[in-house]
Length: 436
Image 1 (cartoon, rainbow, N blue to C red):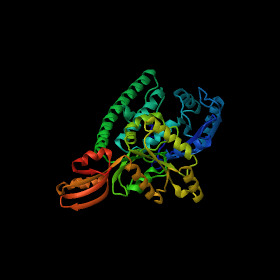
Image 2 (cartoon, rainbow, N blue to C red):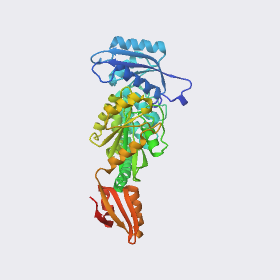
Image 3 (cartoon, helix red, strand yellow):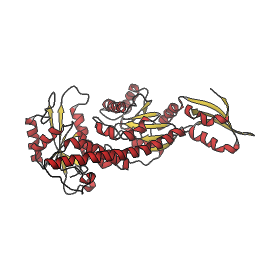
Image 4 (tube, one colour):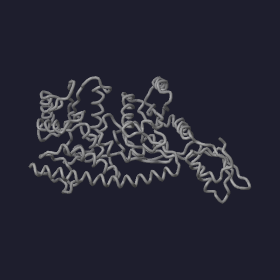
């Protein structure tokens, strides 16, 4: 069974239902209550196509080195798996390779043990659409699997390692070494392919940077409504689903601001609490869209119980990719789900944020105005006289700058524009005077 097949989406899940037991450990002193973290794990399992048949919790100060939860609790989980005919046991925390192997020995060959990272990797595998997205997920999965390979491991997708689909490796030590060698080779191939794709994406980004177009990137916790907001602002048709990680690939659309200036708006992969570091590494080329943006729109689910904790989780990842200091505008989305009193309280607590509902379009004009104000920072106001034979420069002014006034005179078109500092060289040949 492949990494992509451990959980299967509903359209292909007919005969064998994936039945999962969730396991969470309360170690105290954490910002996320155990029940909230397990509720999110349940949503992840549902997104991956499983039904929950049981939940097990344990209180302990530190994980047991052999089974994470201790021998007695591990045996309890194994018994529950047999009683419920569970096909999968999912831990809310990361397991070491040895812990995972010991637990699988306890629950038996018919039940697989996964941790939170493996589950998220499976979801990414289900939702990756572009070539780059699929390569990134394959790389993250194989790097996760490599230290966990053992003689009877059966879930590697053999076609990714050069064999036929469904091939099972032998249990001998020599076969195990062969598996490891094939896995390392495929990892190296994927890194080379991703480097090539990343180069192509970098050329596209450089072309956009040379154009001087102001770039805005949507960031936020998964399911905060980023794709819905992108659609509402730009009229795009990006997939929207009430599922975690419904979209993975970066999508860029053009947005026209109130003054007529055009900018780009890019939706990127959503973040999550305990986002696997391997995924952050694998998706670095996609996240470069965030690195090179002029402004980050931090989209927050205003109706979420863990609003502050989700914002903190996003901030952690932004720090990991080196953009924590980039200009940000917090956008509290889904305000249609709040009472008027709750909206007022949220506005009072977040004076610099914009409150919107992408679903009902409430607050979107305010958001456009705020983006416009941010885009105007660092701009210069120029007075230009553009000869009629250079009409394309007038078009450029309308597309990439804010046109304050425009009149036709004998010598050409006189235009006053507010333009980003990096674009001033494009207009300098037609400069009459600087208004600032």
